Amino acid sequence: MDISRKSKPTASQIIFITLFLLYMIIPIIATYVFSIATRWDRSILPEGYTLQGYRDAMKNPYFLITLKNSLVLSFGSVLVSLLLIVPTVYWVHLKVRLAKPLLDILMILPFGIPGVVLALALVQVYNFAPLNRSPVLLTSAMVVFTMPFMYRSVSNNLEAIDIPTLTEAAQSLGANTIDILVKVIIPNILPGILSGSLLVFATVFAEFTLARLIVGAGFKTFPMLLVEYTRKDGTIAAGLSVISFTIAWIVSLLILWVGGKGMKTSQDVIKAH
Amino acid sequence: MAYLSLTNISKNFENVVAVKDFNLNIEKGQLVSFLGPSGCGKTTTLRMIAGFEIPDTGTIFLDGVDISNIPPNKRDIGMVFQAYALFPNMNVRENIMFGLKMQRRPKDEMIRRAENVLSLIRLENTAKRYPHQLSGGQRQRIALARALAIEPRVLLLDEPLSALDAEVRVVLRGEIRRIQSDLGITTVYVTHDQEEALSISDVVVVMNNGLIEQVGSPQEIYRKPNTRFVATFIGTANEFHGFVSDSSHVQCDEINIYSTRVGKLATGVKVVLLVRPENVEIYDQPPGRDTQNVFEGKIDTITFHGAITRLGINASGKIITADVSISSRAPVTHNQHVWLSFDPEYCQVMAE
Image 1 (cartoon, rainbow over the protein chains, first blue to last red):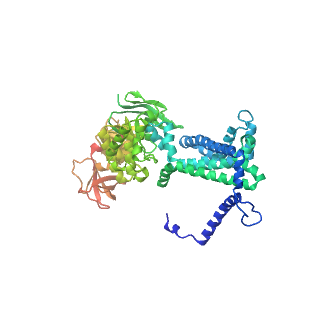
Image 2: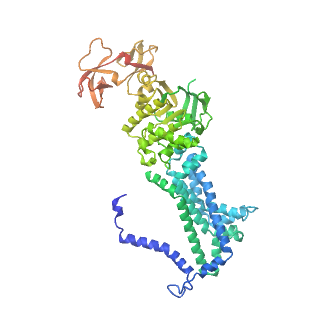
Image 3: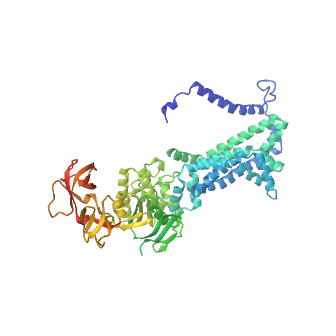
């Protein structure tokens, strides 16, 4: 890297970076503080601190149920997303390069279609048992909704390595398709798979609209509980938000830690390119 | 029957002919090169042997068995790619052991075999390194070792040296030949570099536009090209267009050239006569009366190539290329008046 780039940042750079960080961090800090505040509407700082909000939140019988539902939904979506997208993108890169532009366009659609529309459409189309209003339908919807995150991360990573040649090299050494995917392709695109999984997990875990409209009260998720409390008790809602943040962070760290070793070699590879 | 035999192989890609009516027999232990310009079908043919492409027609036999419909991972054929294709997530030893792992070999055998092939390519100390920590030449050696580790029945090399520096290329092609003949492994080598093909092959297959132009030993290919394409693609040649005037002469415009190579070509047939630059003799005075095919000219260009000097001689309007070795007494000054001659033995004649 250019040495001059390592010189001290200018005052304007510091100001911009600080403003950016404040913009990102203040709401989070405020939420944390609000969740332990007794009352915070008449003074600059809260009048007192208490953990009562958390106690009340955890006393709710739905607390553990919704937490479990959301975790199942999030991990399920990540799993389905991985199983569906990684092999697909691999095949597209290997054999059907012509389909890539088509996929690229398809992957913009979830951004263009509002969640409400997607949810209502799905509810109408799959209006039959056992799919109607089921967690399975919700998971499928979540996978579609978060597909661009997984697709982009994996696709960008595949782009950086010579998939056809590596595949042929492995084939000539006697590997079958599963060996090739598991031992050659996946280890080399692990960074993309990890970041895609993180994005999908975090998005699904915090998603409200789809869950509310597709399954409703039948399969209550954590964000639904949170929204309920925003109408009843702000402190408890803030507490639930904090728990939600924390879980997302723990899961992120977990995924990064699990993939840490593979990640390192893969990054070396990308650096070497 | 030959060890590896390709019969009537054809392959088209969306109406473009890649390979047409390809017939070739390769004996066990031979190193055969497919040589030709890009797009001549040499790589496609190699990929059909490997199983990465399926021939439209024809059959490939290996050791008497039709392998045309066997998938690439079941053919027991090793391949080395131009782009190395080492697995970036594995170190050198893991790369080499990959094929053995796929064959479910015992662990101690895998380690022993990896050490063997590493010593074969003289890179014992790189076992723990990752591909990105190696130079291009080292990577290609590892790729070769990886392909050899599974003891394949046939080794395929697809322009293995094209991505390397000139110097490394020369060293490595010698290495490849040494290892190939030590192991006696049947090898097909694809290249567009004639020097490479001529220097390491038992048999050279010259290809053009999907067709075989000539199959022969490097000496045959160089000294007795069957077609004009082979004569001009391999080395350089002076071309004279004309017609056969009798059983040992070709009339080209004003000049009549004596050749012992007219063969069975009938009088009056339009032909091209080819003389390689190293078969053009140069004199600073008129040569003796018994010298055949003598012409006069003026030195037009002088290009120094190290071991030889290449001269462009203007002989009544036609530029004739001649190579003189540095030790030769031949004169080399610009615009100098010289005499040149072609030995009738070396005047190739072929129908246009």
